[in-house]
Image 1 (cartoon, rainbow, N blue to C red):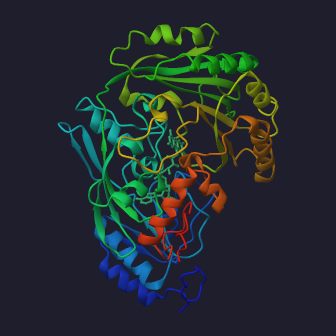
Image 2: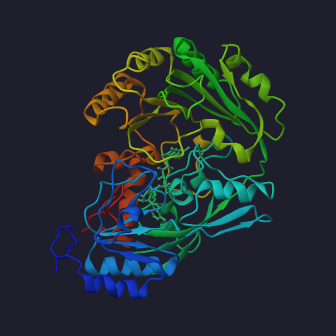
Image 3: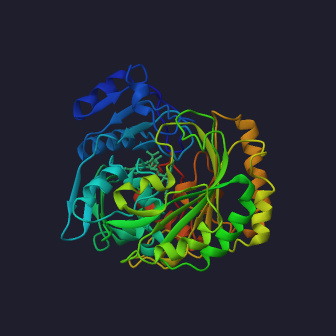
Length: 472
Ligand SMILES: Cc1cc2nc3c(=O)[nH]c(=O)nc-3n(C[C@H](O)[C@H](O)[C@H](O)COP(=O)(O)OP(=O)(O)OC[C@H]3O[C@@H](n4cnc5c(N)ncnc54)[C@H](O)[C@@H]3O)c2cc1C
């Protein structure tokens, strides 16, 4: 039998008898690589990278997670977690234990308290639907298929963010299994360090089995999309950036330069076309001012305009992110000012003639996002003005072409970047420097110290890893 030592070196394999013994303790599935269900259980939304664990535990509840973590810790195996597989926030790990939480879909809305508790496998669409029935809305993001737990603990930049701040700023309590196999209910008062670290440090301290978050008194927003032709990209992007400096905190928006594929699933006017897509989510107590706020963008003559009052339950239509699995490569950066010189620099490297098809998304930050959380957490870089993401699908270009093309985009806009990044938009392989860039330096040091207390052997390392601080 080969085992892993605590440095992560493979020194022994988990044999069939060990896996059988684990299966006896677990109510959900326990699968070795030769099981016919193995591939289905490790598949996720993101298909570029796959974990290849020694064993998958598809948990149905916290007790299964406890058994899986205790097993991993007992063998010195690293632990990976997958909810929806939207991120696979790790190197495609060979070996270890993968805990699949997708069956943990419990949800309890407390309308009076304005909160919801969700299990680790719950996606935003479930919460949006349940909350709407009592006149509330969650701090969900662009894609309703994303998992609540990872999104929230990675920061959580949503459609209501400029009004209410990061989703991580609105967490009441977290149920987490730590490396000792203990299920802890972590709050501001029970374990202040761990509560601080989980909100921003995400997956470095344990496996979260459930989370309680605030809901907001929002039923209707003024939202939708404005689509412009590629030919007006410079004018629209320049106007959009100037416009963002004028809008109130209730206005959350983004702009994307999108190279749509030629596929029948797309509406005819978008098929095979390169467009500029402005996304609007205005969430004020009364929505009357929305039309006037959007007027300067409408004056630029969009060829599609869907911006209107809409139930928050339909907010997923604002970005219309593809709901089906796919393979993509992406890069991300946080920006300070983004002026007309920055727009010119960006447009020199993206557009219909760019070497690889892409989506370039510029999200407007600021507003409440710029304020510290009422209960401090590890989400940093609150002074950033915009976040930029560049995404290309591997179905449409070779990875060897995508990477240099993305690098050229980020090099061109380097003068306007802050050096920081948003954890939620970091995908795939990351080194220690990449991970550190998601945090303010003093927060990163504190996270490493807390990691040394809660996971000194770095069992939770198949992630954007924060190694434990070395003391003494
Ligand atoms: C189409 C799309 C749209 C997006 N839109 C937004 C957006 O608007 N705003 C935003 O902030 N982010 C957004 N994201 C990023 C998204 O929030 C992150 O990728 C997030 O990590 C996805 O979580 P998941 O559970 O869906 O994915 P998974 O791939 O299942 O999880 C991602 C990682 O989180 C960790 N993890 C998952 N579950 C647990 C758990 N229970 N306990 C401990 N660790 C866990 C694991 O390390 C895992 O690798 C988007 C991503 C995509 C692909």
